[in-house]
Length: 161
Image (cartoon, rainbow, N blue to C red; front, side, top):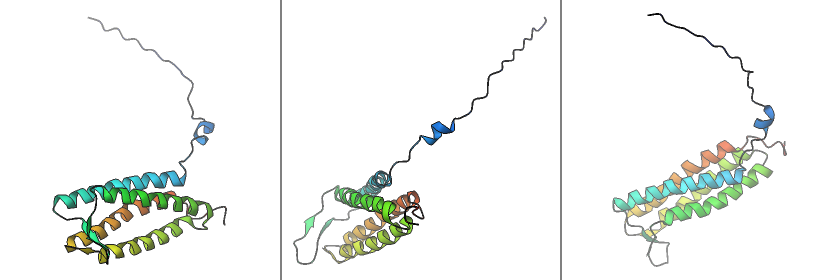
């Protein structure tokens, strides 16, 4: 039996990516990116809340001088999302007007996170687990949101250099 071997060669012009098509891709504005990151932070914080509720942490607390009330089941999710809108506006403003947007973002948000933990620690509750869970939820949201938004901000602002 004989084997028949055929060989075909085709030549095609090399394809190159046009720089015009890659130049047209646009980055998402910082504010929209920050809002998306805040949504991710809210989901992670909501998962933490669900986990802590599953192990029996009661989310019933009050600030000094007020009657204790139970926090809704998705309370942390919506709180992070609401303040995430504020953070997205801050990030957009820093990107536009700050000389060093990334460091301004980090300093401001870390300071605000530290301040936001204080009411969680002084809230009147039945157990210390509630106070600790509330404080840890602030830290979890910050650990998710702050670095992801900081990565998107530039180190220096060419408009303010």
